[in-house]
Length: 184
Image 1: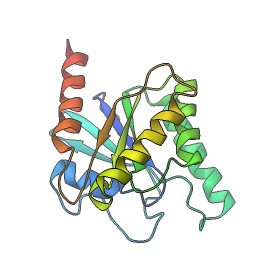
Image 2: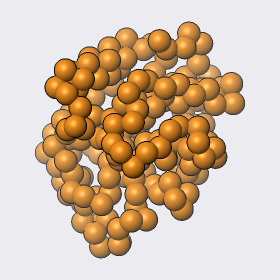
Image 3: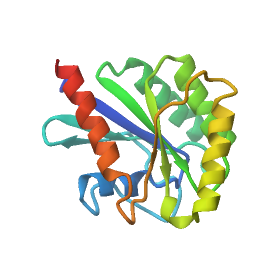
Image 4: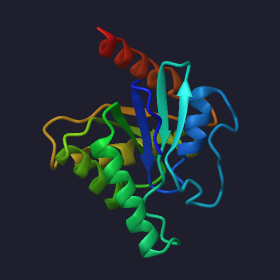
């Protein structure tokens, strides 16, 4: 069940084990707010965290984890679909993509679905500390190339590392700026 407060909400989503919980913990400076695990698929429900009584951060289940049943994957897809299309105070999705690997079809399909559904989103390139600059640039270039096949304009892309705190200021500034615009 989602909170009833009519304050802005930002949803964090991505493939299983992309680093959602670690990124959330880094952003809010709380090591164990969102549960982290080396086992993919830890988040099974939508978890809401109220930040400074100003906005919600929603940690959504990861998509694409092969070790859950087809029925569970379908249930997750239904929950996410209903949440995305019916949550009136949802301001933006943060789609997390692993910087260490080339763009995955699951990520591209989800991004395409968001666009087709007219749902606002930004992309968060995670784990940039775990790949060298050449590999990161290559994978980011491939992601942009794939997106430009369907999109006239690229979405905003943040580069982050939960370990090193990279990208924290940019992500939080984006949320703060967006919240200010919503109030005016």
